[in-house]
Length: 217
Image (tube, rainbow, N blue to C red):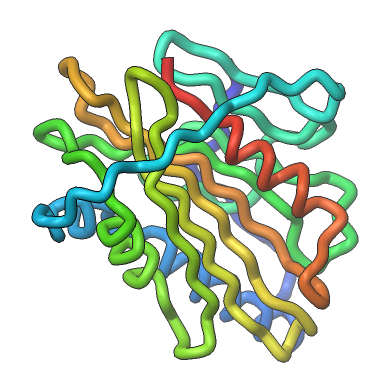
């Protein structure tokens, strides 16, 4: 299984435009890397059950996949191993080599270790997690509690952060999954990030589908 390198460097000088966009990207990375533990330990009195997500296996040839004894991770066909900076917990990173954006669309698989099984998610705990990512008051936040299958459940959160400098919002969609029982206490995360010009992107639908298809075994 290919893995993304942990550290990369850029030897070129930085233009003013690159620095502005770099700041935007750093803000996005900062709010998507909060610990999930805080939100999953709150709102224990909310008994709303997670909705069930039906995961249909892709048959249209738009995806490649990495499959282990723990998970099945999908990424858009044609994406290559990422050349950006990896973060602690990253297992895989794939990005669009033919991007038309100033920063490539990408999807990352992460794993975060925990000392015990995380509780059953509710809409409120997932919303709390999503709100932890808010960087600005006009960020658009969505959250959903999901049951991936009979073995796992989790949350899907979407953060859309407007950016005047690049003409469209930065969108991050994350699917968290963890086991209902057993001795693997990790939280697994499929996270896609892309720029959305006027609310659309040629890669958005495929990336969002890749996140939705992510599942534990």
